[in-house]
Length: 110
Image (cartoon, rainbow, N blue to C red; front, side):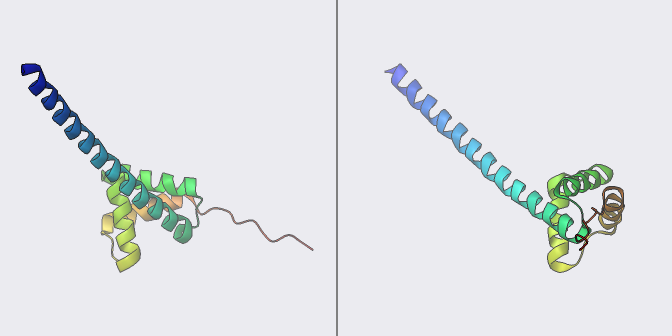
């Protein structure tokens, strides 16, 4: 009988582990979407390529010692509400200067 209760405990432990893993995956998907949206804002507003937008976010994160996801969230709030902390804005401007703007090809000559 002891082995039966051990099996139930193993099942409960496994369910708990799977629930924790599902929660981590949900958070990762949400975080990825936030970062992708912030990269899109850098592309649109900063006239940089998506790779340069990613580099801008990484630079701002590294130079301000703020997690990249949090930088992305601040950029999205800035897009919606027009407000961003002064230190983040200054570093964002500096990073955009370092990485962009991307060159836009000219229209073909006729």
